[in-house]
Image (tube, rainbow, N blue to C red; front, side, top):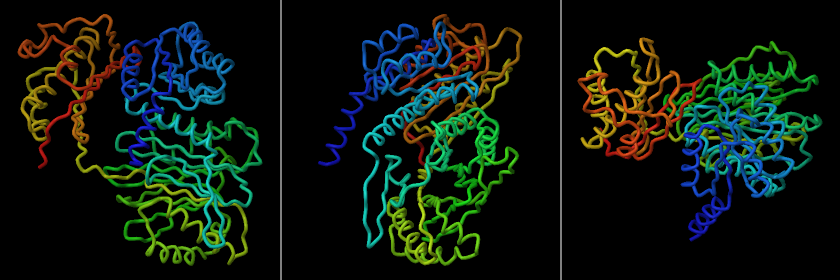
Length: 527
């Protein structure tokens, strides 16, 4: 009964949220409109930023999602004008071109988050949920007090998913501002934790860090934790006059390989790993503060991270002292004893146990300062049914029949039902023929990428080119004379894809080319 009430409240909360989409790219705008409406949001969309401002004057929106670059009035100017009228509205910007400076400028004026093109609809849904969720936590003061023996702590749920994050802070005068960010991209879980002294009165400094983190990860070639921290450190050293200590921990988890790559820098930052056999290991960390030198060498390490493992981040001077003086193992031994009898499946319980042991350890060494604990399982639920395969086609294609045979070979081992399999192949075929026909100028070489993904009970197909872009308003039939041998399967394009597949979304710009996303629920071969 309680679950039903919670579900009703969650749905009604979405129904009350009004979202305005502002983007001059019609295909993307309507795809977002449809997807968010299905999620229960009250959505309006418009292509003109000036008219969008007029709508905001009449309607109290909860969230505005705007493209960064638009004719007449760009996204940043639009947001600045809206802030004058509606101070409480949240903002998300969509960008394909913006520099990190532009993104940071947007964060400074109050943008909650940003998304880089091209993106998946499921990804922006998660961003929207996070923006609304963070807003709720702020309004509720995000606090609650728990007592255990003679220890008083305050804990706050910084992420509303079970077994993901749980933060505990000591009540004795919090001296540091701590923040986190989290990105999910396919098999990868990317996590950032940081802290700075509360004495530094820097407006939106954590948002600047998050913007650099996300922008570097979305657009950079090197997505390793060391590279991400290096980019952040270099930027703040070069662009912020004040020198003050900054602590950062960054981790990238590949749920397929079950490997965790991590890097941590900070004088009081300790990172631990809990594994399912109830043992605690100290991860390598570096007691060096960031924002001191732009050339600081950033190192990283890799460990196995099986399902059920937990990362525990502790920022505490007493433990830092213990590490420096070789006394940390007495604390770890005590934690191992506690974990042997405790519940390590729940991040909250682990965080409370860790904090209690910290309090006892502090009393034994005479340290009494602010501390914090954050626990994460990185949402590491290994999906054994996940599967993907990528094909690259060089244009012009010599023998297209062999390509179709390859599609059949790949999917026949996964999709049991012949009709469902051929519906997927036909739809992918249409998308490929459109790319071959429209993406590249005549006699120009190019490349088309096809990715098949098995995710839960769906087959997802993505067809991507880096050509001239595809304007859906000027769509015409594929040339029936191209690849004559397979002509009977071509020429019906977008309408056929939408008829055969459960979901189809097309994203296209002149700069990025075209990506067709398709999904269909199918019967799987379990072998």
